[in-house]
Length: 547
Image 1 (cartoon, rainbow, N blue to C red):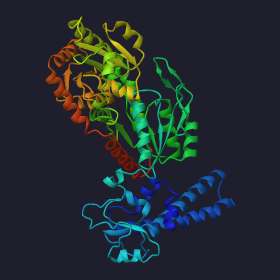
Image 2 (image 1 turned 180 degrees about the vertical axis):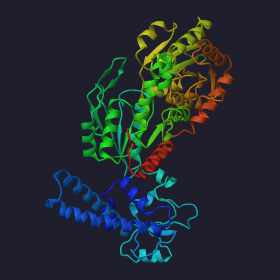
Image 3 (image 1 turned 45 degrees about the vertical axis):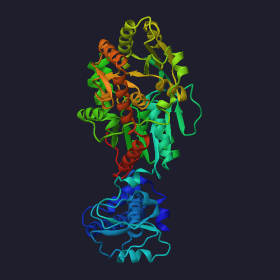
Image 4 (image 1 turned 120 degrees about the vertical axis):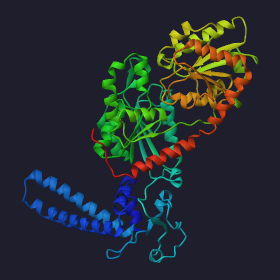
C-alpha cells in the first residue's frame, strides 16, 4: 500500500511532525484547508523556481539557494499531500468532523491511544460502523486501526511504553563498560532495554584497553584522565560523529556526558538536524564543594546549561537533582530514575564461605562498602568511622569491615584503613551479588551522588543502611529505610553502626524496610517510562535549540 511505502521512508520524527501539522487541535476543516492552500502554493512556487532559475535569471549563488529551497518546498508539498490522502484519507472537498475517524497504517498501532472523551478505538481486524469506517473498509486490503482523534496523536500512553519499534538511538558517552561506575552500567542496560523493546541502539564512546569487541559500540581514540586514570577522555570529533549518523541513520541522539564524545554528538546532531536529548549524571555542585572549587561555578554552570539546553530533554536520575537543575536554568528536565536487577541482588546469594574469608562467622556483623575508592565518595569518613567502631570491639569477632571497588585513593586507603579491614577490589557478576548478600550493614558516606545505584542494590540484598542525611541518596535512604547521620561526621557514622550492632531487631527492621522499597524499583518500569519520554520527544516539531 502507498502509505506503507511512504511511512518506511521517513523516520519517527517526521511522522510525528507532519501528523501534528495535519491533525492540529483547532477545527480540522480550517486546518486542512489552510494546509491544502499552503502546500499548493508551495508546489507551484517550487515548480516555477526549478524551471526558470537555471535558465540564467539569477546569479549563481542565488540559483543554488533558490533551487535548494524549491526542492524543499516541493518535497514538503508532496509529503503533506500523501499524508492527507493516504493517512488522513479525506477527499479535498470533504469536510472533516471535529471528532474524525482517522485510519492509520498498522505500523502506528502500538503508538495510538484512546483519548478521553473519544468514543472508542477499532483495533486491526475490527470494523467501525460510521460512514468514515465504511469508506475505509471498502478499500481493498486496508488493514488499519481506527482512532477517534481529538488531540495530536503522538502522546505517551501505556501501549507505547512497551515498544521501541522504529527507534534508532545513538548514545554519545565518555564512559561505558568495561569502565565500572553507575553511569556506564546504566547506559549498558539502556542499550539492552531498547533492543528488548524492538528498537536499535548504537554507542559511541572512548577507547579502552580492556574493552572487547562489540559491533554496537564505536570507540574513539582516548587517553587516561590525569586526575583519575580509570577514566579516559577523548577530543570532540564532529566529523567522526557525522560519519556515524550518516552511516547508521539514528532517529534520536542521546548525549550522556558533557565532555569530548558528548560534545561531538551534540555538534553532529545540530548539523544533521536530529532531535537531541541529554542526561545529567554527575553532581557537579557537590563535587565542586567537596574539592573547595566553588569559585569556578561561574564557568561550570553556564557551560552545563549550554550543553543540556541544546537538547529537547535533560534527564536527571532523581527529583532532588532535577529540581536543582531547574533552579539553575535548565529546560525540559525530566526524571529518569534507576532500578535494580532482583535476579542479581537478592539475599539468596548469601555465602558462609565468603563471610569466613572476610573474617566473619555467624555471630559477626559484617559491614561493607561498595563503590569507587575516591575522596569525593567520602571514603575517609567511612574509614575513620569504622576505625572507631573496630577499636571498641578490638580482640573480638563482633564486627568485620570489607570494601569492594577500586579508584585513585585505593593505595592510600589500604595504608590507613583500620586493622582487619579487607579490600577485595573490583567485583562483578555473581561475586558482587554474594558480596552484598553476605553482609549485614552497608555504609555509604557519599553526598556527591545523583542517585546512588549501589544503595539500591544493597537495599535489594536486604542490608541495613547507614547513609548521610543530605544529598540525592536521601530519596532512597530515608529515615524509614536507613539510619542517617550528619554528612562528613565519622563519629556520627560510628554511632549509627554501633546501634545496628547492638540491636539486631533494629538491624532487621531497617533491612526489611529497604528491601520492600527496592522491590518496587524494577528496570522494566524505569525503561518503559524512558522510552515513552523518547517518543514524546520524537512527537515534537523537529528543532535543536540555539547554542
